[in-house]
Length: 448
Figure 1 (cartoon, rainbow, N blue to C red):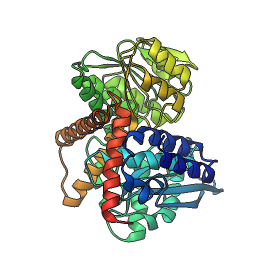
Figure 2 (cartoon, rainbow, N blue to C red):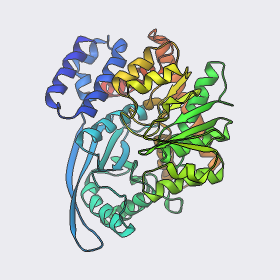
Figure 3 (cartoon, one colour):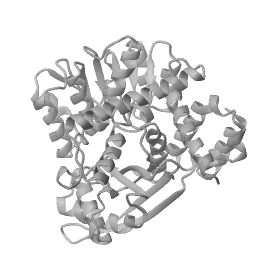
Figure 4 (cartoon, helix red, strand yellow):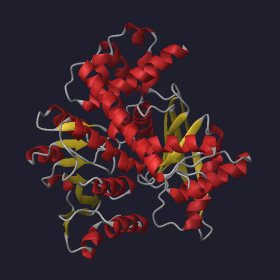
């Protein structure tokens, strides 16, 4: 690693030694962009320090009452990493595993994920350790309203635009946006994205993250002289990302054969596609039980493997769609042993550093990271902002075509950067370098 980068990493580790997810994300990024750090301006302007630490981070308490009238208090965070190329933009995650380190890692990743969409948006993230599972609609509404009472000071169409993430879907966005309007007294449509179609939302937003990952895969295969049609894909998770991958892959002639949950995974030789099976995934997620075994109980073509991960299956493509660090070294070894040809990250940082290194350095498999392939959701969020600004709603086909073009452009920029620095087919490093150069040039142009 470049000496300047090593010094920045050392200082960061000393300051945030108790935030492992954040440090893992930054270290991996610095290693990826190392070939592009020869420009003396970066150290002279201390650019890396200003890129790896957030421009602002706020934490706050979120008090709320349950249906029995009992008081509860959760913790909330919003981290704003970079506004060099546009207003801060990133998701809100409601999950008991959320903490300052997770929010910072997500915000850091989001900054570079957003940069290559070609849209003028910076990077941010936020959330709470609140668990929406098992809560009534009115309890979730009261929590969201209290959360927004603290958050509204720091967001806005030209400041920071939150969206959904794990635990924050259309219902939660509706409650959050409604409270924002009440407090601010204006219908500022672009203050949040992921809204319902009746009040400023964009078509295909729900499936955008997964669809974008599939479009990235399609372009990746096309550039290798291959085709997505007929490919067998292993997917983890069963939330919005996995559902979107299943839906779009089926439309393009591929077949997703696995989805997973905390209880294990299902293998469906006939493919997780068609209205009935896709609706089943939505029902499983909405049920809040965090188990996919019910899918196999409903469809005879599926088998359930309790307590296991889908990476033991021999497929053409592996696409982790669940959560951070879900894929370890043992999983990477299985993927390579099964001669999987393509590894495409849809979730944020789904592989541990050791697992990702093993996959990246293997000549047997072509890899793409989440900062490239996982950009579909934020791309459509930014398209939602554009539609709100002109008070016009594009058709489903128009949004889908724009998403496909954006994802193809991200692949092309990643591949070009990898080629420029002699990195072969290392799309993960290529994406990081291309995004880093875009943001750094904007920062340099704007001065200290």
